[in-house]
Image 1 (cartoon, rainbow, N blue to C red):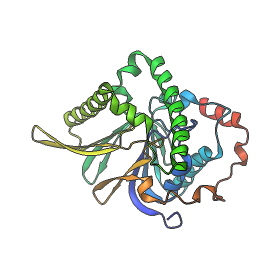
Image 2: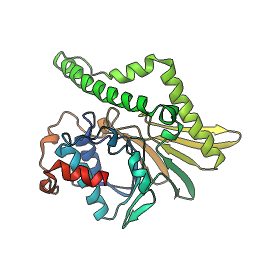
Image 3: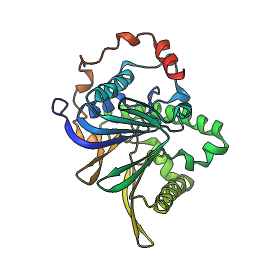
Length: 281
């Protein structure tokens, strides 16, 4: 599929969390190689600056940056929308260069209908009043993902199905489910007030497309999910939105991850400190 990428109008991804152990960068790179979008929207938490460490930035993570730059070079318009984990970039909002734009939110017209894109952490009360707790939770989540990977390795060896510990924990707490429901409802109501046709978020790692009718109005709520557990993206083509899953698109049992990508030159980033200084400047 990488040799014949699918032509689509728009692709939207969020919550990649580059720089953390939980990030599925190899899978994301494979997905990005399989598409040729006119527009690529990076809807927040792409680079996890909260947990960024000079000692952990593997080649697979650098390849994502290189892949996006390569897409830009071929004509793809890239919008980077800031999230809470990359909020350091918010002071550079409205920066643009060639076919790249950095912003906090975005409104696009798609076939005479308006789509409102933003990460969604503005609705998170923890982010407003207890940021230290949110950061502590992020570290705990990354640790949980590592533990989950070990548990799934054992499950595979025993011939059992893989499981998601974090999803089971979320589903076991009514408060977590209520937060997700409140988040979605708040986004929908605000978008209805602004008379948008679509509202597209990230942040909560819950991929979804849902048509909502209220007071005689219709709006579609969309969430692109994440590239830590769900490995999902949103695509728009021919007046239709699709929620695509890596596991449904590709043969996940193949040995593709070990292939050499000759188009990506990592030699210039052998010193991780150079990359770190570039990001925090």
